[in-house]
Every structure is written in structure tokens, then in C-alpha cells.
Image (tube, rainbow, N blue to C red; front, side):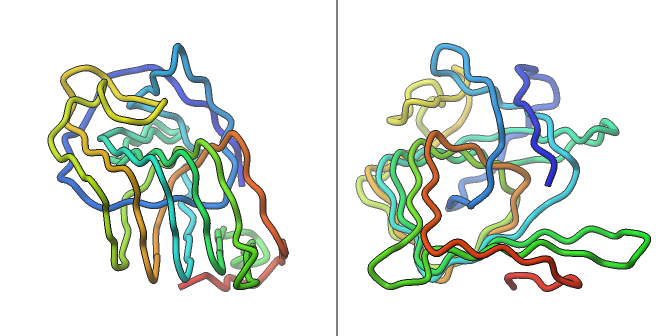
Length: 198
């Protein structure tokens, strides 16, 4: 999976409706200036899938963004931040078309009930998520520059935040993820013929 660097352009911003979001187990190198996170970021152009039995997190925020591929194609994205997170039975998959046919990368971690994958200061850019979510002390329609997480959006942008987030049956399609610390217990990485998490 190609790692990308976040950029600071505000062009092409999209206003997204509120959707629950979660985190993924993939590293994306990114630049953050003075705690503010750009709403436009560069991506490899390949999406990846994330599945987990459960995500439990504290310190959550979400606002709109744009993912720009290397060919200039722009994709709307929901940018989510979680201060601390636990992922139970985590799965990540990405599939590419190659001269040899479809080739996939399948990663699993946190498979033991009492040893989930752990993440700190996560930020993810996604465009699809399903599951059953519970938010505590949620605020919807706040200014993105005032959300309760260290990483924030731009002043005037629509956002939501909450003290905690709990998602069961997580299924997510993402463009990118970055983390300060990601601890993948019981890590397993396999090359496949295109097998995905869901």
C-alpha cells in the first residue's frame, strides 16, 4: 500500500452529512501544522477495507474533506479523529489488479478477546461505514475548529464530536489512516489472490 502525505489545500471541499466513522489499521505519513489537520489530502488512489467485531474509542470528532489521487481525481471523504481506540478482531484488506491477476494484502490483529489492537491519535479518511454505533455526549453541527480532539478542521466547517464512540460489526471503506501509535497484537499479514475482509 502506498503511503501518502497530507496537503493543505482547501480547494474542492465538500459538505458531507453526518455519518458515524471509525478507525483502520494502516499507517499514512502526514503533516500536521499547529494541531490543525488539512481537509484536503493526497492518496495513492486505492481504497482499503476494514472490519472489526467492535471498536471502542474515546475522544472522537468528524468533519468533511477531499481525497485527491495522483491523477488529480478528487473523492469526498469523511475525516475522523479518535484519541484512544481498541479494535477487537481487526481485519484490513487491499486488492490490486496486476499482470498476474488480482493480488491482495490481508492483515489481521487483536484476535484475542482480552488483547485488542490499540491505537492513539488516529485520523482516517473514509467514504463508507456500516455497523451499530453508540455515541456519548455527542455534539452535531459544531464548528470544525472547535472539536474536542487535538486534530481539528477549518473554522466555519460543519463537524461533530463526542466523548466516546462504540461500534459493533464495523465495516468500513477508507482512503487513508495515520496514527501516533498503533499496536497490532497477534499481527498476521498474508498475500492473497484477492480475499477481502467483507
